[in-house]
Every structure is written in C-alpha cells, then in structure tokens.
Image (tube, rainbow, N blue to C red; front, side, top):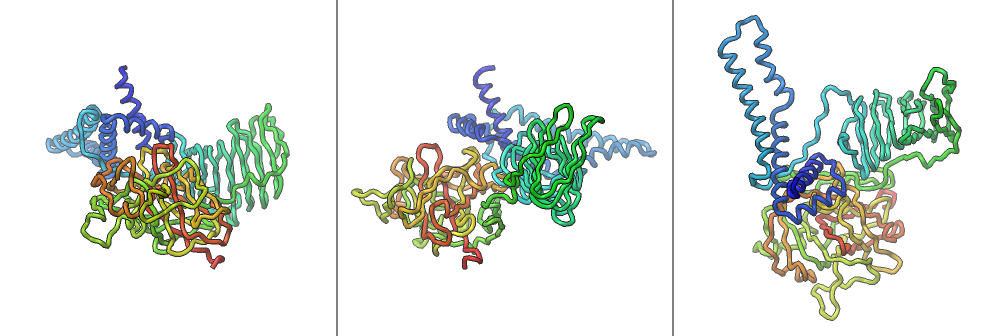
Length: 565
C-alpha cells in the first residue's frame, strides 16, 4: 500500500469515528492536522460528510417499518389463493429494481467518493432511534464530562435505559432514574446493564444508589454479589476482576454473595448505616468486613452548566440562545436568556469577529447605529461574536492597559474585557456562563484561556480555564448554523476598540467546516472572590502557545439565588 492510500485509509477511519461520535481527543488532533495540511483531505472530508448526511436522510424519509412492509407485500400476495398475475409480477420486479438502484447508487457513491467533488454539506446530528422491541426502565437525567467507550450506545439527557442493553462509559459521570424512583450515579470507567425494572447489573465501575420509599427491593448485581435495598443510600465499587466493595450510607441492605459453587457456605447478611464489606474470589467467594468510607458515595453530579436551548436556523442548526440550565449548590435552575445579566465589550486586542451566514459586516452595512462589538454584547446569537483575542503565556500580574485607542508608549494589553450591566454576585456554583464557538475538528475539551476578575486587585487571581462543562464530545453540545469569519491582519490584528470598529478585514469568508457551541460555568470563587462579594467585569486572554484561540459568542451573569437577595 503506497503512502497516499495509507493516509486515505487513516483519514476515513477518523471520519467514521467523527460521524459515529466515538472520536477521541488524540484522533481529533490527528484529523485536524490532516485537514490543515492537505487540500485533498479536506475535499474527502466534505464528500464523506455529504454521503453520511444523505444516508441519514434516506433513513429518515423511509422508516424501517415502512420499508419492511413494502418489501414483504409481493411475498404476501404471492402466498394467497389468487393466481399470480402478470401485473403483480411486474410490480414486484419494479420494486426490487428500485431497491437495487438505491443500493447500487450508494455503493457507486462510496467507490467514487474521493473522485467526485461536491458542495460543502450541511451537517446534521439526529438522535439515535430507540429500538422498538426493548423496554425502557429508566431515563438519563444528567451527564457530566462523559465519554463513551468505542461502539457503546450514545446517551444524553432524556435517553432511555433499556433492558438487556449493555452500556459503557470510559470517563465522566452519568445519572439516571428508574421508573420506581431509584436514582443511580455511575462514575466512569463503568460497564452496566439493566436486567429489569428494579435490577441493575454493574460489571465494572463505581455506582451510587438512592432508593427512596417505594423503591424497596431495588437490586444492584455485581459479578460476586447481589445488593438488595430496603430504603437506603449505598455505594458499590467493582474492579475489573470483579472484586466488590459495598458501603451503606444510610438505611439498610441485604448483601447476598453469588453462589460460585454448591459448597459455598457464605450467607446473606444485612448491612446497616456505617457498615461495609468486600467480596473477593479465592476458591469461592470470600467476604471481609472493611472500614467504612462514606466518600465512596456520590450524592450528586458537580455544579456546572447542564444544558442549554436555542432556536433553530434554516438548516436546523442552533442559532439564538433561549435558556441555560445550571446546577448551583446541588440544585438545578433554568434561566431564560432574558433573565441573564448582560455585558458590554470594553476592550479588545485581537484578530477576528464572526457574523451570521448573510456575511453582513456591521461596519459596512450603512447603519451607524450597528457596531462590530454589538455582535457579542447586544444579541443572543451563538454564531456571532468578537473572537480570537490575543493572549499570553502567563496569567496577569498587574492591571491590564485598556485605552479606547492604543498609545504606542503604553501598548494595550492583549485580550478582551467585558463589563456586566450590573455586578455579578459570587453565589453557590457557577456565577457566569460563557459560550465558545468551537470547530468540530479542534481539541475536544475546548480552548484554553485565562480569565481575571475586574477591577483587578492583588487579592484576587487569574484562573486558567482548561475544560468546558459542555465540550465537543458532550451529548448536550449543539451543532451550529454556518457563519462568516472576518479576519484582520494575522500578525498585528486590531489593537483597540476604536480599531475594531474601523479596521479593514478580509471581507469575510463562509466557514464551511461545522462548529458546535461549548458552554462553561465560571465560579467566581475560583477567581479568588469571597462568597457574597461582586465583580464588575472580566478580562479574557487566550493561552499563547497552542494552535487555537477562544471564540466567545455569548457571555452572561447569573442572578443571585434567593438566599443572597
């Protein structure tokens, strides 16, 4: 196999993982490098996604039940007592001919995928259909930083947990609720399967269970034990070899070892609050009492941005933000976008802004009332913003210089600053939400950047953002409508707000590669702000040294919680 064929094989493996949503961070980086270096690879990328989209559309337009019915109709007719007429035979031939043409078209499309240039695709991301013959016994209520094992079913908030379906997560946390009220949190890596309406088999991983009144009898099965609840909170931790720890936080459970042989003399034991056991194998199941460790129990997922809702654009991509759901102090709150605290852009030294797919530049639309800074501060769109701020390799150690026009003797500090329309209170959990437009072949976790509270003081600190709450691999990340990218001089960019409004860019270019909206909750406690105190604004700097820059498309503050008012 020559080098080019080998590269194409690698490329198509990566594209398959991308479309199946199983791509890893390392594979993302490899794909990004291939697309950046090879124009032919980019064309293969567009062709592959177009074919993927067409197959999805074919599936959506011809449901499985309908296809099965139509294909079986001639067979049913042929089994009836009436003679098989010439017209029926011709109908059958025509039907199978149509199916053959569709199949040949798909195969030919695959054979000539790398030869036929096509228009850039509109990427879609439909939910996976639920298998009709399986029974739903639980529903996913939350996920956090979750990654799915390769080939495992993809789950998000609202997804069903079905009987006899094995699930596997490689990292992160998932919470689901059974129909009888039992709540389960699993921490990855974990492999699990529901075996009934009140029965969960945990093959591997850490599992925490809350079974309220009415859920008595709920059972966690492990390779070495069955843990039967009687109104309690308990945790189960299963190693790769099947060894199992059980910790009872409150209430009581019956723990019954699995009978590995008929001679086993280990009996069921009732555990109450503060008791713990370990199950291992040594010519049979061995049970040992172990010290109680309440930290093994996970009572809730971390405070973070849980999800968001948007309007849909002409191509069914996300466009305008409508609400944000956030966990603060262990409780979930949904905020309509109009309830968030708005911002003003007060400083910018960077190189780009993005506009809607109409490509209109506010500086050249003939309306003096529209400004480029308004793309970030005065709309709710997730496909407009003032992006790619310049940055630093180190956090700020002194107040930033932010003149309306840059003074050559005292250059402005690289980055951007925003001021909230009213001060934001440091309350429980996230106090600010930031949305980042992130191209789908960029690093999975999101762009790394620094954020500093304003006004700058020595007792507050710059915080480095390394991971978004909703990142590229999160089930809740939404695919965006296409947009136009306007770029200033790559080296000098623009150095102030005045230049931002007046500088000439490249006129804008339609961004053909898909992007998603990532979401981050910023807790002011991480910035050294005491609880109950406020900040007036933020200073944002990209982390220099990596290939990508942060692209803020929406920033808003959360109102204080009731106890703070």
